[in-house]
Length: 108
Image (cartoon, rainbow, N blue to C red; front, side, top):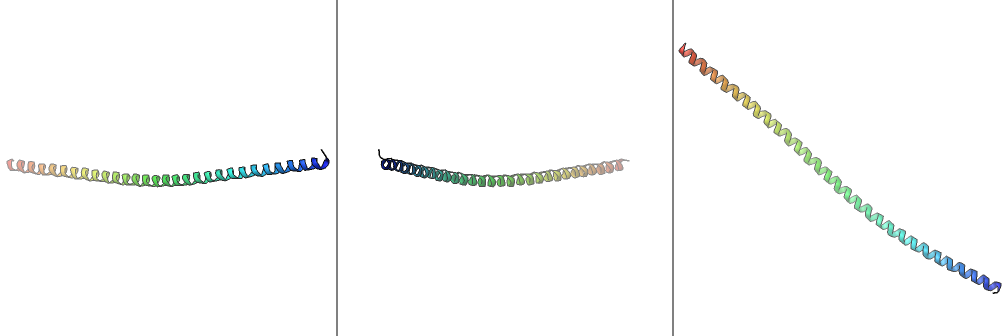
């Protein structure tokens, strides 16, 4: 093999290596782009799920607040019922004592 042929062979081999390198680089870039697209898709899904979680948490807070308000109202109604019962009992007791006093006053 002559020196020119050897040089041509080396240059041909270098050209093949550059072509292989370029092809490999293109495959890597393509794969990186696909991975980037997948990451973007997953990020969007996470963002959507976070929005749903936030909305669910907000709804839960609203329900808890309504439950606390209703519980407070129920306690207030119970307090009013107890107050009315106590006053009714006092009125009945007072009326009974008036009647007893009147009867005793009549007979004494």
